[in-house]
Length: 160
Ligand code: HEC
Picture (cartoon, helix red, strand yellow):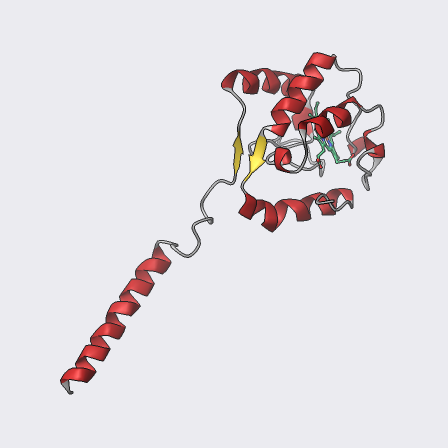
């Protein structure tokens, strides 16, 4: 083998090894293991909102931080990342509506649909709306999946 050929082979070898290491470390897919959901709420706000959320059995239908009552199987949209799709004002109106399906149409059976929380004290609805609006999802994940999920469940293109 000539000197030049040896050099080319060595260079290819080095590139291959780097390729393997790169793959192994998922340098090309930094998102794969990253959790895409986060909140911008203060600990205090999160605590207050979570109490109201629990007391009103929201989690018997919705999952939040990937948690849901295991006994329930309502196909409701997850709350993680909802603040990247909806504004606080929208969320407040939705929770305050006597008929949430007039805002967001539903394909589900009545018993699975979003109930009206219009009778909840205004302060509670404000805290819920504020907290839900703080639940964000990173853009790359939103693009991938959240919109599809919303459309599938509600039949509505949430980007409009
Ligand atoms: C009986 C099951 C059920 C309960 C309980 C429930 N939801 Fe829902 N919710 C749904 C369903 C299903 C939808 C999708 C719209 C529909 O089908 O009516 C929905 C939609 C929503 C949306 C709109 C999501 C979007 O697409 O932007 C929000 C926000 C929401 N719920 C918050 C809450 C909160 C907060 C509570 C508790 C106070 C709660 N839900 C309780 C079933 C439920």
